[in-house]
Amino acid sequence: MDNHSISVLISEDELAKRINELGEKINEDYEGKEVTLICILKGSIFFTCELAKRIHVPVIIDFIQASSYGSGTSSSGTVKIKKDLDESIEGKDVIIIEDIIDSGNTLSKLIPLLEERKPASLEVCTLLDKPERREVEVNVKYNGFNIPDEFVVGYGLDYDQKYRNLPFIGVLHMDEN
Ligand SMILES: O=P(O)(O)OC[C@H]1O[C@H](OP(=O)(O)OP(=O)(O)O)[C@H](O)[C@@H]1O
Ligand SMILES: Nc1nc2[nH]cnc2c(=O)[nH]1
Image (cartoon, rainbow, N blue to C red; front, side):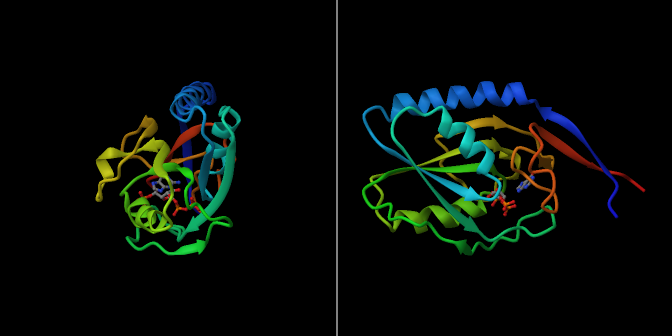
């Protein structure tokens, strides 16, 4: 069994404050419109819920699931759709909600696929960005925090499907022995 510990990187209060700011910005940018939030399962569920509560224009929420990294901590480079959206996004103003952008592989595959469905607009909102890890450029309109190249858990992010329920973002430290 793994021996590891977790240290707080971004506290619950800091998350709430920044998500408020992102919500306010989205309210300004989408004034008079309806916005469709696409939550990328599973990691983005907490962020999507918290952000959606702060958006005051009409909101539609839908879910999509891309293939996962599995139990490891690095990108496979290939992305498959495991669960597709329920509704059409044709003519909709869409924001993709991500918990984290790491290599950029997931979004670089997902964005063209969603663009083919002819949304009126398509933007990306991520809670976390690890710019040092980027392999493929992704156009990100809303970004909560840039973080260092550390494996993080909590607030939806897992290690081996665990720790998604932590109310903060923590760094996972693996013990040496
Ligand atoms: O920029 P990338 O290198 O592609 O990494 C980012 C993706 O990795 C994580 O998902 P994961 O595949 O771990 O699935 P999960 O959200 O179900 O945990 C995260 O939620 C992003 O979707
Ligand atoms: N849980 C988790 N998933 C990721 N996917 C890409 N980067 C990360 C990370 O730092 N933590």
